[in-house]
Image 1 (cartoon, rainbow, N blue to C red):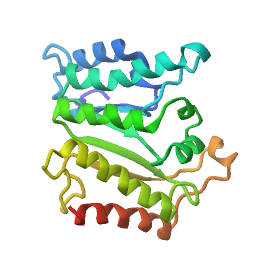
Image 2: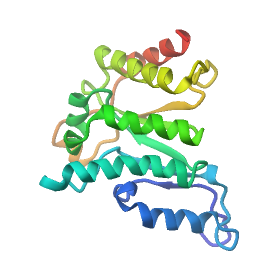
Image 3: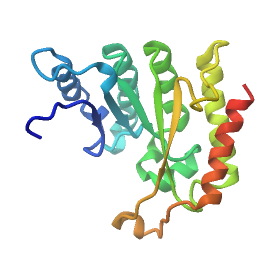
Image 4: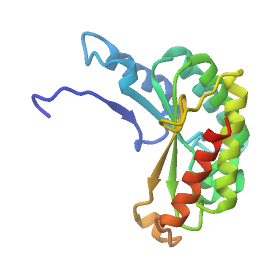
Length: 212
């Protein structure tokens, strides 16, 4: 808008940013440049689903590898730019229900790249988790999410706690997003999690914090 200064940028909802890594990095460079937008790195977030949409039979393994390596490249090229991971489910099978293309990309490999990102950048990570009733808000998946984050903490923390009780997470924090109806979701009768399911996930995250 004319007269308003641009303050925050999120690369999201425009296709997978890390599949277009070089152009996204040029864009970020311009946003940081004093002669352009002069933004601080902390005001820029790159959101990734952790998989490549370019699923091409024979090349799918290589595309997955280079895509995940781009998470690490981001830590090296712009360590102060935030990374957001659209996780949405804590296991490979449950994630495939929500993100069909993730069947070609193992969640363990994604978390390996996230671990390396955190170690290299020293930055924070936002995990996006959309709340869908009876899909990813069960007690079992809540426990799995807690274990996944606990494991990440153990691997990255090196004896230092990533979490604190005031804001749930010190370096890794979870954004629980209520599901909004969409035409695509309506095909699967997706609905937003109700209070019970939402509290299950919240309580498990709190348990992870308290146990540290």
